Image (cartoon, rainbow, N blue to C red):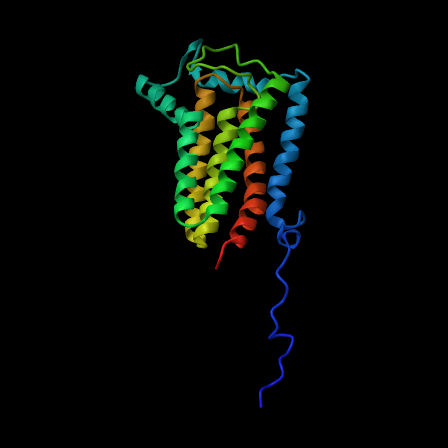
Length: 239
């Protein structure tokens, strides 16, 4: 005699998109929310024209004493820093995003690939919009060692490199379903993010608070994208 089916045997309804979206009260979202609030506070202060004393002090620490036209260190270090800052340029981030998106797409993770492209392109629009809206001047106390074309706050290199690399690390972690791979990608991403941000200070093209603001907004952006779009896209893929 065939046993009667129980409620445990019956397949439950497929969870809705709203039920899969993480709650704002979950611990893993605390950091990006705090980062977003800190960015808003910093942007509000800077938009009033306020100047921070440590901005000037930190930039001058990276110059030869008494000579603000010459960065510290030998010529090879200056060239290495220019190479590092190039990784955070539009061209560098374009190739990183393209390579990662194509890899995800070819491996069958198409929603993640599309989500990555949307994350980076929308961040680019927001970065340019904030620069225009706030209109902060570039540092004028040292010689610029790289060309600049936009306003200073937030640092586009810091913001966009953070969004791109943390999004790539997060989406690869989701697609691999392995904690060790996710940790490795996250560590490598942060090494590059920090070096790119510091390179902007060394070259004299950004105030430290520009880079800090870019990092804060980038952490908030990439974390929320990974938590919402990334996890939803991963759950929508066939098992």
